[in-house]
Image (cartoon, rainbow, N blue to C red; front, side):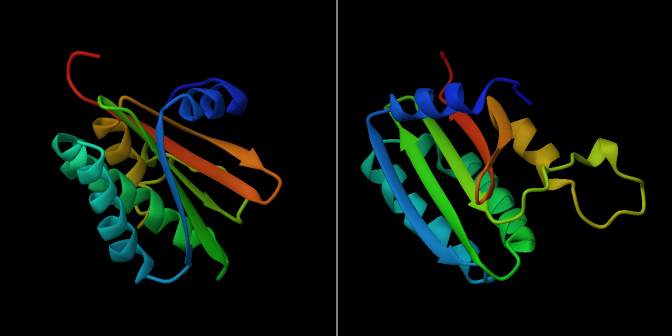
Amino acid sequence: MLTCSAGDVYDSALALPCGAHIELGALTSAVPTARTWARMLWSCWGLTRLSDDASIVLTELTTNAILHARGEAVDIWLRADRRSLAIFVGDSCPDMPVRADALSDDELFGRGLVIVESLARHWGSYRVPTGKIVWAVLASDGL
């Protein structure tokens, strides 16, 4: 996990020229909807080479958000340039994510962040007035 300020992460993402946002209900159907929406954008942005890993990261972050959104909406923001992609997923729960290595062996959830960490160049989370945002950055080789 990258430790930097929420402002630094936000400013870096805004510097990426391509961007999109979607708000979805906190329902299990939001996960495939988010993936379909995102894959279309990544294709338009010339980032199909990141699509498989990005889909897994998006799935993990969206699934976690749905579990913690308390029946409310989840927000997904994508920002990209030709070589990198930032995924932000927000939910209404202020509790910060916990990686699996901080969990006991009998926990059923929490291992998705290990997957995110293995696929993303950087990832992290920060609180916002309405809950939290968990983010990940993926990049093509050579960055």
